[in-house]
View (cartoon, rainbow, N blue to C red):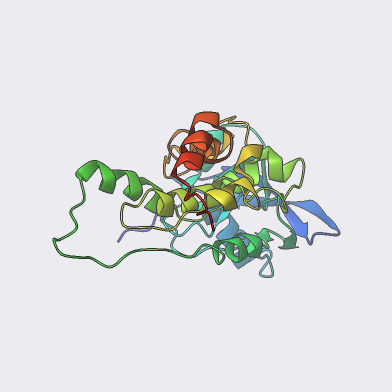
Length: 256
């Protein structure tokens, strides 16, 4: 494979956040430009030549693992999918996901998301005769949610978490996708409506679509996950006709 060479005399300056959650600052680094270069390439050059102690999380470099998520000029992006030439002559400022605690440099502590995900228990029923058949549209709906790479860019941009810090009241869009993946699977029999209404707090989302806009997998988080989950909560807790029907179906106490 032929190595690409740097463009003679052409450099870009990256202003990279260095420090932890309590004290940090931007440090300027000059990087020689290579055609097709992405931000992660530039960070690797900085590690190799100027700052070997620069902390940055990455794995596949193919936009499949979600590890190299961060903020570029204030926008949540994947470092491996964002080209330098997309910013023209603009300065490039690289920061970690600022909605979560910063461990060091470009690495944020996203463990809160995994802790919430552990509270979601699948409720799949075993296949029973006659064989359980899925319609193609059912498969497609769940498959969309399964594309999530857990980059947490949607969590970072969600104003309920980022601006208001309501981590104890709303689980955020990425976890709504995970709940929707289970709730809408035709072989899952568990109900998470009460969880959505209480701890997961789906009602706090005011449907601004900002999470959908930053999803690198193109998942329609707002339309396909959050809004249907809101509708399920409304049917269960706020629909007066549904409540009346539930009372009719409720077993009546027998007289002594």
